[in-house]
Image 1 (cartoon, one colour):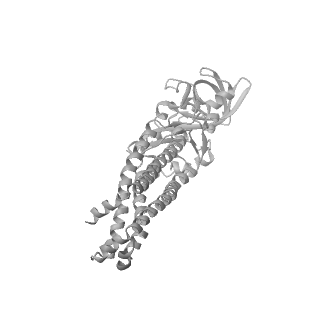
Image 2 (cartoon, one colour; image 1 turned 180 degrees about the vertical axis):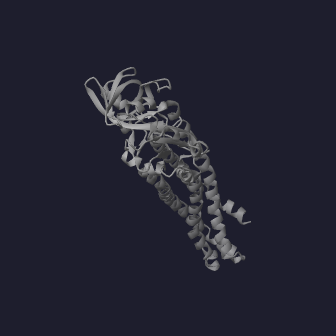
Image 3 (tube, rainbow, N blue to C red; image 1 turned 120 degrees about the vertical axis):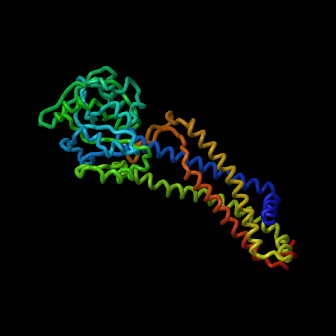
Length: 407
């Protein structure tokens, strides 16, 4: 009976109910969309840092990521360690040798970071092959091909096919130098990579540095980047003592803090938006209770208990919240799907922004995450109940005699 009464009472003033319902639907749908866009932004930031350069996991000597010591090298065979090869969470492994030096063409020189890679393995870990603006990614048969950033190519005024000279300090104390041929140019939007990063074949760099059969690190890709820390914890006891397995959260502590703060930020946004929605719900049901004072008095005079009156009003708010939640979830899912498939390109208005080790790209797109639906849904129902509590409490405390006499 209470459910039937609650549903009928909800539509006694259709205009007021529809206005409140529309506000709740709009707030829920827009909140779901906003959270989806924020998640997409954080996903892009994490991908720009880990899937374009670092990798999700890195195996190296302890402290190498802080000092980049030329002599902190490891045997190249470590890429095939059983613990790494047999781990189901790891989907790619790439050995790397790193050097810093000068890259020159004619009378122009630029400081660069040069990574020696095996192209077919590196493509399993990073995604620079998808960021090419000219030329091609180095192939396995290339002896001295170089993939360079767009900013660096502009400074050196080179195109694919041009020759460059790389000069650096070799491990035996000599000056290592050799020719590179530009095979391709990439653009990530991150000025640190676009202006300084060069990829070249691992055997070529091993020869230049006089480091035959040596590498500095093994970069790895995991199926779920958010579980990288757990994977590192599980695999570390299986590795030799002189090795350190680092996840992206250790390599990029600022990024880890940004991701960790996202849940707090999400709750703050939900709370602020739903406070305004709750005020609208509160106003609607206060007006409804005041208009029905005589009705409540008659019900109480006929024996309905105060807790039943309170439950009736709360049930009305819960019904209104459930209807708004159903429609809001549907609208939010449709808008999120549109932003996921199409998105909005803002490249003509803003430039990429580097923050916390990642890059915020000039495009808006959304991703589906359960939390982006569960949090707004749960909070909307809670706000509906809290907003309905004061009117329900007022109705339950009415004096039946005074309420029946009220016009």
